[in-house]
Length: 525
Image (cartoon, rainbow, N blue to C red):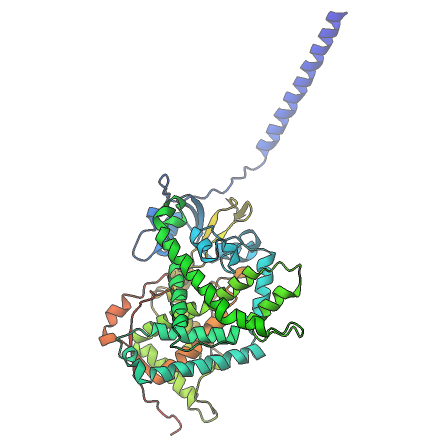
């Protein structure tokens, strides 16, 4: 009986095993009948151990030119390991749009570079621009939007325009004084005075506070902001090789000291006064600083902390450095292109001397009436092709079917979007403001192509871009209405060599100009 039972068990096992084999065979045959789906695989340059592909980024035109050269070989999306960091570079607008717009929620992170932490009290998430996307980020942007992205015709827009005019007048008055003769003669740089003017535009608009040009603490803070702007627009090996940190101790210390000094100045010279006069009962902010402080006091459950509002105010006040560097580049491009400068001045003269105009100063609201000047600003942004802050994948995802692992750093190669012949034609590297101007219903209008995204796009687009464009426009028209801008000693080639594409930042101790007073033709005579 036992033997019969064993044989029954064995027979049952054989039958079960046979059924399993049969079903497995059927499944395999079914799978073979299906068309094979090939997974997309990213290619990229060969990388060394430890250092990765950092050597591929060498070259006089900077890493983004190198990214473009690599794209010619590996396509508009490719992988590259930089030190210890896995990276993907996207160079076509379709891929950029997918990263920044279509899947912006999956690529909302920022790189975890040590320098970013040093600048913001040890935590880059204190920064508005360098933090990962979060509910806190959304809250902070919503507070800033009313003040930093004012709508046309709004009260904020009028306040902005008024301040821009008044501070531009102060700048021109200073330049016309004997005190500034060395600047106008080209023996000293215009940049410190220009940055101080723009810093006052920001502190007046955002903090209802103004500082004199002779305030040493103010001037030192303006310089520190500019040093940081120059630094943050450049890459360092330590960003990708953290073990090099001991060799960058002096750099990290400088960044730390600049940011601490700025924070101390803002607290003692701006915030303390606002706290004394804050009207908590009416809940009506006088300015951006009040709005931040009222948000802090509005609810014990608010996710906005004291550190958050301090760093947010610092972030936006630092925006004056971006505009100052942009204006320096605009002036440089106009100085080496007298024919372009003349067209801007003719547009200024025509506007100021039309019979129906009662103003002696061009305002922020007049941009639409001066398309050529506006086009010069856009063309400078294009030709400078400053890099967009890299994004980071916050989940396992894909770009056009190419698998992207969580924590992969995505470089947006807008160098190619701004200077590629396939987007702009064979004259892409020439400075031609006319490329932004089209005639619509008999009037010249600014038309920007979809792929031109100097302020990024999607939910992480630069929230202060209207301030950048508006303040730059008022300063440029004010200066060119009064002065001819020339290279020092007519050294056109020397100035031109200092204008490398790939970065909107110019060195804190940058080139000088000769500013010669001009006679304005009265077109009414």
